[in-house]
Length: 333
Image (cartoon, rainbow, N blue to C red; front, top):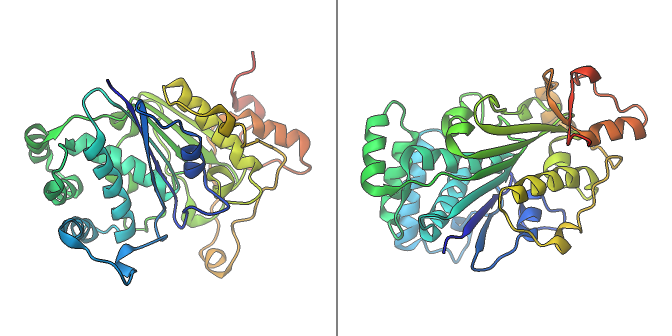
């Protein structure tokens, strides 16, 4: 019998802690049984096992080092490499034909989720216990203009595995000036059946400018929410705004088959009037400067943004289009 496989990828510095980000909170709300299994990956910069005094790489660790060295040579850091390959390997070990795959992520975890989908699209999914071939997958995935080789490898060594759903919070272009983020995961419409993206209206850090989708292709929806980066993706103690984006994502995922525990979902109460934090502070961010995000005309804006405008004094972001140019969602009936 087929099952659902749900992978949750956290953002930079995010791990199991008191102030949890939305990927971990969504993971907490999931049902787990024989019909649905799940995987959680902490964010970049949380723990490097090679720094542990008891670390022993073993044969699998050495293969992992080979794979990560391939990607590092292409310009990605070791931390995000581990995240991508950990998620890929979980799928390799657990996926059988007919299973439905769901990927979630926040910030760089959103990059990770989409990179896994891009790897699956280009290279396919290795059969179980083929760890020794993972370095080949990574090299083929990150090499440009090799579609013939990629197709041959995919047909010979791998299975087709297209995620049913990708749900991400505030994907940002923060890999550095020399990276083209969309190259690493390609067009979202090619990599999944359904895509949902929650975006921050009020994040002004230049290094956190969003990586947006072309929603004209496929069943893709992007919705803008009040708050800075972590007000949308979670991580602050005052989490009323993050709960809005979390509940929206849970609703979208549930409509497409993910099973949740209602008692746990109810713990995360949305509050459009809760604290909106200031992220553009500290010497490094101030020195790098600000960049106001462009919310395009006819954008989908969550209805809670208008609720905040009506309830919080002086909340009226300059980057929002005129009210008659905004499509508020969900639509009131």
